[in-house]
Amino acid sequence: MTPERTTAATSAPATRPPQSPQAAASGPSGQARPVGTNLVTIASGKGGVGKTWLSTTTAHALARFGQKVLLFDGDFGLANVDIQLGLAPVRDIASVIAQGAPIRRAITHFASGGFDIVAGKSGSGMLAALGRPQVAALRNHLLDLSSDYDRILIDIGAGVDAAQTTFTTHGGITLVVTNDEPTALTDAYAFIKIAAMRHNNPKLAVVINMASSKAEGMRTYETLARACETFLKLKPPLAAIVRRDPKVRDSIRHQQPILLRHPTSGAARDAEGLAKFLLTVTANPG
Ligand SMILES: Nc1ncnc2c1ncn2[C@@H]1O[C@H](COP(=O)(O)OP(=O)(O)OP(=O)(O)O)[C@@H](O)[C@H]1O
Ligand SMILES: [Mg+2]
Image (cartoon, rainbow, N blue to C red):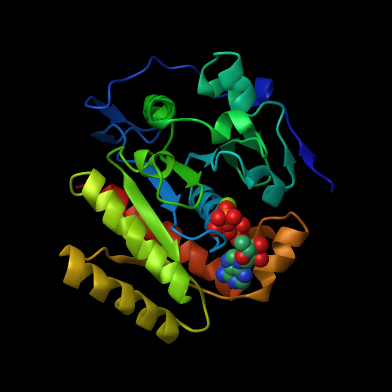
């Protein structure tokens, strides 16, 4: 491993006073918006469907579109955003929580990607054991940070427990990632069902990852959307279809962002499409 070394101390953004979730805020671009609408949670029922890779690549794509972006590793216990990017953060969220310090102390700038990261700590029992109130407190810290950024992306762990669904309640959008495997589809459906049961009218959208073609990806989306319409009476829109591409694995193996290593690959282009979807959605909140 050849991690890029950075220091949180030299890269933490300027401090701003906390805001209540109801308050209106203006982002770095000066555009007024309700607090929290610029938060994007990347979720899935089943593990291993590509959440972390999609989170890092979409954060990178948004940064290349001129956005000020924070990527928060919310996969407590099995965090690996920093590993995929070859980054060795000085502080991670576990050490910051242990010290009772604010989240912004854990921000590291990922220079070659042009965005900020709050790393997790893999294997941290303390993080894995966080209950709903602590997760809600972390979400509120992110809401406080939301006026410092154009977009905040949150990569959460697989599953449908309180830790996952609490992160979806912030006024922004939750991307539910799946592939065409029946188990992944069933678990994506379960995530959508539980999010809809626990939270009134959550803003959700679906990402089909590892599709063998756009047409096959569309069929997978329609299968999921049909089940949601029939049994839940809701139809989350399609955010993106991302094709299966060997360049993804190659980039992860070399701990380099795909947009630097293989910028013209199909998966890189599709992830850029997802970033464009997010720009559209957040530009038109509600
Ligand atoms: N579009 C793609 N094409 C090919 N391979 C992919 C694609 N997306 C993800 N992968 C592969 O899937 C693996 C798992 O991806 P990733 O770690 O991002 O999933 P995850 O959903 O975050 O997993 P976990 O639930 O364990 O956190 C990666 O190592 C990568 O090799
Ligand atoms: Mg992951």
